Amino acid sequence: MKAKLIASIIMVLVITSCDPAFKLLVDGYTNKQLTCDCGNVMLIGTSSMRDWVHVKLEGDFKIQPYSLDIEYSLNDAKDIQLWYNDTLIDNSVDISVRGKNKLGIRMLSQSKYPMHWVSNDTIQLLPSGFILCNGKPVITDTIRFYSKPRNRKRNVSP
Image 1 (cartoon, rainbow, N blue to C red):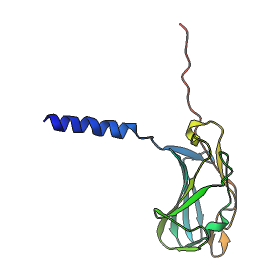
Image 2 (image 1 turned 90 degrees about the horizontal axis):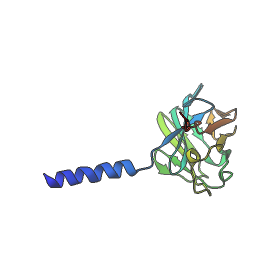
Image 3 (image 1 turned 45 degrees about the vertical axis):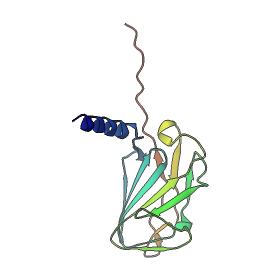
Image 4 (image 1 turned 120 degrees about the vertical axis):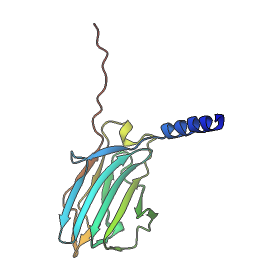
């Protein structure tokens, strides 16, 4: 019985010590849905130990990783990684997507703090040929990801 109690306490400590993921706002909303002839693209941003843009694809698309045009205020997007269905991919190879798939764009910041710790940082996904539908870009406007403003408690005098 004592071993179970100790194991339970250790599990609680391990789980609570992890850095939680904070959702980033996408153009002011929790996500952004793009719909085109090829299907749907949903964009979500998260900030934890690293900042991420998650792209959920449902349909038939062509991905050109080398066409990604992104600005990241913490390091000007010099260092990013692309993940396709949880596998790190080569940025120079096109990918044909069919059905439900996901892309991850991971920012490798030069800063020691992710976006949810700092107030005015942004990720901007610029119009490009990164995701194509029938040879046409799906992202045609700049999409901005940023942290929700935090409610800070103030000391109130009686």
